[in-house]
Length: 408
Image: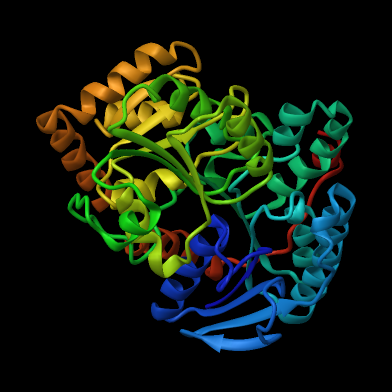
């Protein structure tokens, strides 16, 4: 059972897709799969090829121009895209399962064509739905021209795997056959465990948080997240000296957020650097209540995987975003914390203060998070993927698309 994953990030890179892929690839290797990961050589000093925990890693050399802005990032995407497709053509054979992720955007289209040339089995693992996210965030409606080709690649696959029912709607609207559509939720990063609240941990002391109740945002400061809401919540909580707000991570919004926080003189808000994976559990444990946010309009195209890590750390969640989306339902239906729309931060601040002062309610939410986390672990997900993929290897076939597929 040979399988090839293609994604821009893999160990030792720390973006969420890289961490998820590392867990899945190593888990499948432990079950007897012959696993290859084609990824980028973005991390300086890593070898072009290596074998780690049973996974053959092939890193594509490319440009590192992202610091030069949008054009530089596009060049980085393009060089990885071409290099990765060449590796797929070289490594895949008839019957090999090729799994395309969604970083960079539209990667699946190229992998579809390469897999078709090699008569391989094709699976799309859809973490984000492009170009819809870019259209929603930047208003570039011309990107709609990419949809027919993207939809054709989806329909040509043996299976499309996505993260939830809201995201799955986009695939059914693209006429992906229901028997070729699977929902497999993400999971908490391996090694993250529930820790008891401790106001005197080394990291709390290092960050100067003392015994305060800490409201934390941890992870990518990307554009799909409504992070201005974090500043508004911090402003509404500023009169309470026993509550601190922290932002842990980096991303496209960090500089603008720091400038806005300085302008607003938010004394209770601290920006902190992203933590290495080996300290992720300790870092998550610092937060007493964790923020998950989504910009309205993005909820059908992404599901924040940070939710699973927070639950595994045994910390309640405050979701700020559309209250009728799947993330909101997940939090409220499972009793994981609080759900709030973008408006009404005074009322939301009151709810946070009340939770900070109600140990019984807090303990109830912690217990719910732990129960939820037990159902969303890496071993559970690996087994789901194994059961999904194993039947595909017994029925390899050419990947074809009709003219109607290409047009729709």
